[in-house]
Amino acid sequence: MKVVFYSVPILLLLQVSLSSGDVMNGTMKLMMVQALWRHGDRTPTETYHNDKFTEQDWVFGGGGWGQLTPIGMRQHMQLGQKLRARYVNGQPYQFLNRRYDQQEIFVRSTDKNRTLLSAFSNMVGMYGSNNENASLPGYDYPDVPGWPAGFVPIPIHTIPDAEDHLLSVDNACALQDTIWEMAKTTDIVSSYFNRSDVKSLMGNLTNYCGEDINPENLWILFNALKIEKQYYPLKFQQTTPWYSDSLFEQIDIVNSQVQDFQNGLGLEGVIKNGIDIGKYLRKIRGGTLVNDIYNHMNRKTQCTSNNGKECTYTNRLKFFAYSAHDTTLYALFSLLGVAHLAVQPRGYPLYSACVIMEQWQDIQTNQTYFKMIYHRHENDTLNNVITSGIPGCNGNDYCPLSVLKNYSDVYKPEMEMNQWCDYNMFGSSAMASPFSSLLILALFYLFVSQ
Image (tube, rainbow, N blue to C red; front, side):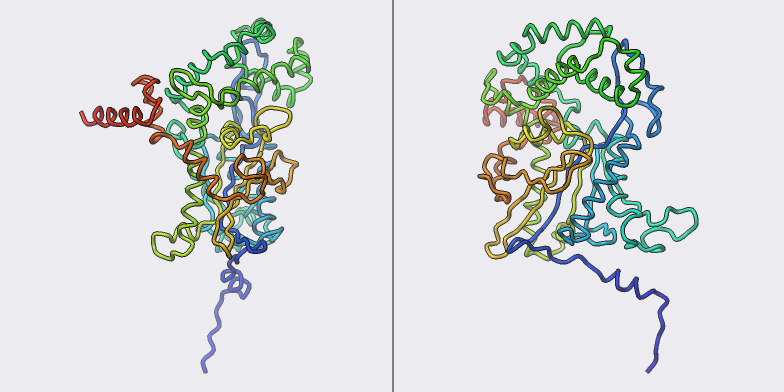
């Protein structure tokens, strides 16, 4: 008998053959995980006219407006470590391979430095240097001097920001602008904007800032003040003498209310020119995303018993991540009826907030369920199950996938968003009924066929 000695280490043979097995919770089998997170700590994206802080003050993360800071990088590395603990290391699930497997994981980001770098930082936490030496030099990363030990580069996918209506919910969209202008004429929004205390606050801030401050651009001031005070407290105190904590709370209250209106909250059942204002705002901002999440789950369910070529990608895919913004998370929360859980007492999700949608299947009944988990901030755990708060889930942690399907059907955009966003050129009233939507579609194809 001839004995052949191979140079491949025994450890490598063992680890290459290691694959993640089925994860069970009673009769429930974990099928897929989708994670949607906000980027980490960042610099201001812009500021107000009289601000003594300029872009040159923001030297973190490459410098300039809207960049991920080292704090933000650390926040996402730690979130990645939490995800690894939950889904790789068996605390409680050993769902994903201990070594990075490109067939299991897909990461999608908006085309912003801060979201791209948050995704990279997150993957460092999941499959970087602190992964119990599971990654192998020469196979998962170069075995050469100078390469960070254990660092496995993982691709992050994106599309141009101007085309991204999946995750960039404030992207240019004439339809959204039209519906929002209509919302401002409703009694609810107009009366709030014209309240004496709101108008007084806007007037005072306008004087302080040297430019018009109104409810719609208040978020710029809110973010600038919050971040400047965090990073340069002494200079902030010296250069912003009009600031006080009570004034900032007033700004926060008004800004949060405006953000709720922009996400269709408080406008449920408000009809203007035949259009359900609240529903359309939620559909425009979150409809594409909830359909993408549902479609991943539905496809996974359909492919469970199908080993054909058309299901190869889906059957191997286990973890799909979206790296996005606070506006993205809040749009989803608003659509699913759990916006009140985003931040207490008010506001948009915090840095490195993360929503996890787990897909489970009962192997006895073959019924499919989803579980929604919320990581609220950098010091939080991945143990906060909030599925029970979704209307239609009846207080259950495991909710039938049919409930999510209903949300995706109700809020499914009329057509591809890059087309639908331009449809206000035909007149907003044309969107009032399914018949008129078909008429618009016919007109569109007639137009493009010329």
